[in-house]
Length: 474
Image (cartoon, rainbow, N blue to C red; front, side, top):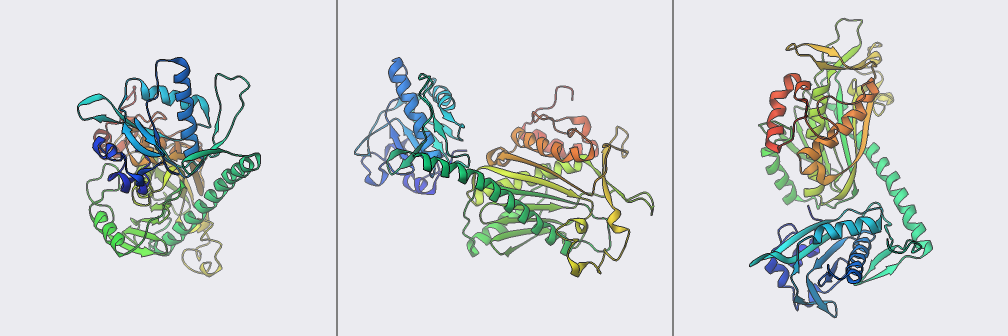
């Protein structure tokens, strides 16, 4: 999905994924469409003459880096300009253009920024038209530009300044790298804060007639925060969407029953105060949490404090949460880029460090049971015998985490990219239990049919609907 700034959507009359040839051509002569902090025009990018081709490739790479190092923006290839105002449609030929520019940008910009391209064909000639290059602001800034043909050319750091570019001075480069490091620290701190809030909310409403009650928490914090205006209109729209939205992968009915508002967030819930509670907290900046209680296979005896959960359920719940949270971040809050994501599994909601150290809870249920703190989780998997389970890991643990950085588009667009991200996170989580990787989804995003046990019939609906490939040995 193309990064689509709201100012440009208003200017063009549509999001960049949907804008038409005629809408772009209509910019000619429009003074409001002049080149700016987030908009640039390019005429034809030559593909024949070697020297001109190199210059066109290099100029495009610099422009992508300038936007990535600033507020993001759009390059319209195939439009001439006079005095920064679009003046004439030039209709560039598409053949080989995207692959040539993509390779040129990859070779010249370090680290390679996130950007997308879209060809918008002339109504009467599908082989030519406009090429849109959209680059969001980058959490990996600053991006440097090199010239491959110059062995000693070194690196330079460009940034957009109005309709032009400037080259960063040494002090500005140092400050930009410092911002990159500090942003990563701030993002990790926010993730921990939101995760703790989610656990505390679950602890308040956890079913008190049953324990241990395992808790799975999925937390997502985008690199590039959004800004959702939370008002009555947005809440009503969220409530209407929630009535129909099937969150769980492979599901067929709407997941949540109630909607509410808390400080700077929307909240969706179902089954509060029961062992089946599911809650999502969706923040206005695009960050979000998702909590669900996995099915706990009861300990075998009063002296057995090992809580068994099934690996297939953890994987399917994680995929569901990742997709739902990413769609909130990207589509509702307009966050962009990548996101820091963590999944956490605890043997009981009240055993999490955010809950157990609180003095006011120490004399309450369940802490009045001295054996309670002995609970640990053991990861199990289903065997070929229907209804049978066996231990999967070699270790038991009270608390486990899996963490990764993933692109929001990969999660929100579903299919194999979501499967790959889920496999990576679940594998990281399962290593706590002595398991090197999850069995249900391979690292390449293919599905292992035989590892899902009783969950397969539900998961199959998701796999078929998204056309996710099966593993070669499945």
